[in-house]
Every structure is written in C-alpha cells, then in structure tokens.
Length: 123
Length: 264
Image 1 (cartoon, rainbow over the protein chains, first blue to last red):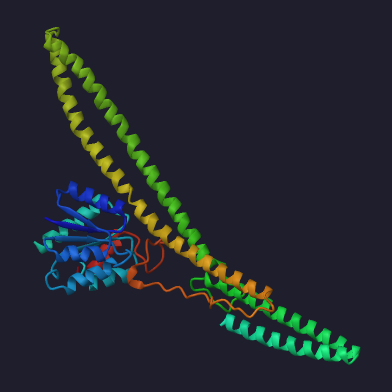
Image 2 (cartoon, helix red, strand yellow):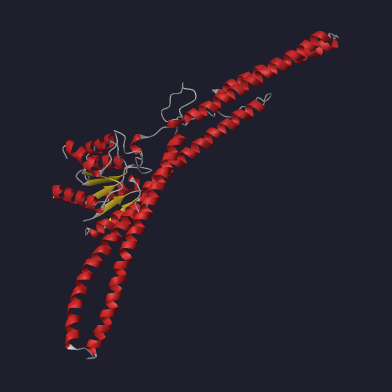
C-alpha cells in the first residue's frame, strides 16, 4: 500500500506518517502542496492520498478536483485531513468526491477509523 | 484617487500662488501697498485652505486605513466597530495560539509524567529480578525463594506487557499533540499577513502626511490606496478559532453527521 501524505507543515506530515506506521502502513511518501503532489500521483503507483486543504501553491481541494479530473487517478481514494471546519467546505469536498474528511486536531482513533472505512468501501 | 486629488489641489495652489505673486510684485512696484497687503493676506488664506484640505485628506486617509482593518464593519458607522476589526480578530487568533500551545504543552507533560513512573517501576523491578536471578544461577537460592521468584517473574512479565502498552500509547499521544505546530502555524501566517497589510496602510498614511508637508511640491507618490483584501476561497481559511459559529463544525462527529446526510 503506497500512500501519499500532502501537508505544508512537516510536523503534521510526520504525525500522520507515524500513525500510519502504527496501523501497519510503512510505504508512505510526502509532498508539501498540490503542485508537488500532482506530478508524484501522476507518476503512478499510489493507492491512497491523504491531503490537507489549506496549502500555498495548490490547495487540497484543488488537488482533489485535479485528481478526480484525471482519468488515471479518478478512482484514487482521498482522505482530507484539515483544519477547515466550515460546513460549506465539507459539502464542497464531498461534492468534489472526497472519500473521508477528518478535522484537525484529530485523535489516532478517528484517523484509523476513517482510513479503515475507506479501505472497506473501496475494497 | 487621493493622490490625484492631492496633485490637482497642489497644482491649483501653485497656480494661485504664482498669479498672486506676480500681481503682488506689480502692486508693490506701483506703490499700491493696501492692495499688496490684501494680496499677502489672500496668499496666506489660500495656503491655509490648502493646508486644511490636506489635513482633512490625512484624516480621511487615517479613518479609511482604520476601517480597512474591519472584516465586515459598517463603513458609515462612526467610530468604526472595533469589535469586528481585523486587529481584534488577530488578537483572538493569537489567543488561540496561546491556548493551543498551552494545551499541547500540558498534555505532553501529563503524558510524560504518567509514563515516567511506569518506566521507572519496570526498570527497578527488572534490576531486582536480575539480582535474584543471579542468586538462582549461582545456586544461592532456597526452594521457597525460588517459588516466590517464579511468581514474581510472572507478575513482572504481566506488568511489562501492560506497561509497555501504556508507554506506547502515551508516546503516540505525545506525537499527536505536536499537531499544534501546524494549527498555530496556519494562524500565525494569517496574522503575519495582517501585519504586512497594517504596515502598508501605515505607509500610505506616512505618504499622505508627507503630502501635507509638501505644500508646494508637485511630486506625488504612486497610488497608495489600500488594496481590498481578497481571500481566495479555494485556498482555505485555516483553523476555525470560534467553533460556536453556526456554519462551523465543532467536532469530528459533526463532520461525520454532515457527510452521512450527504449520502456518505
């Protein structure tokens, strides 16, 4: 399972990476915004994308839209882990095709649950 | 616009001054002192008027610079509502940074304080058992002592299991608590943006003030109107520091409810 973690704060990338390692996912890669993430995703091989929303360059919501618009990536499971907590933002992410939404600050249990749910659904 | 008006005013003033000056020379040469005195008086008046106008513009500039800090303040209100100013907003944001860093520091220290005695007890018990074990190896141990060591060893393995489990949990909690760095960082970046804006607005004020002093000058600085703050929606808003707002979710549960209402 190859996972890409996209967040502009390296601390948060490390935290997520750490939690994923506890969950048994060791093949994680990192990008600091949508602009660096997109070419990595297009490079292929990723099974799961975890992205922040608020980032310089290309935001997470734009990255999500770009992923869904790309035929080779359209079905990639995407979990948004973000501090953005407005209802209309969550609705926007849902409409853009997000598979899960976790608000920061989050607990290890919440992240685990969402990730497991996504994998259950996409099988 | 302010600069253009100022330039126009300056031009009028200088033109007025030049006309009055040549007239004054003429009157003086013609020994018409009464008329000359009247002219001098009108020059002073015109200078005062120009000064008043410039000061008025400075005041308006100051006012609009202050109003610019408002998020959705009513511009017609006097004085502008400080409650909703961006400065106040920034203060709230910084307060949030303090709260978040404090809570992260507290929780991290709680976790460490909880973990430290567990690690210490395990270590002490391990070294005590090691001594006993040494006695067993050298055959210094009685059968009763061995029986007690036997159960003690079993207890210790149990303690070891639950202790390391607890330690692992605490370490993970500590890692998770470091998320404050991201959340506070986002908030601080916003406040930094505001400070840059305030700096620009203050620079505008300095320019306006400079124009007041520069009564006879015609060199007008580049347009320094405060630029409207454009927040690009897709770039996000950062952490919501006030979770009580109706349009903001206050917990992961609410996110889940909202998503399930959307068919997730």
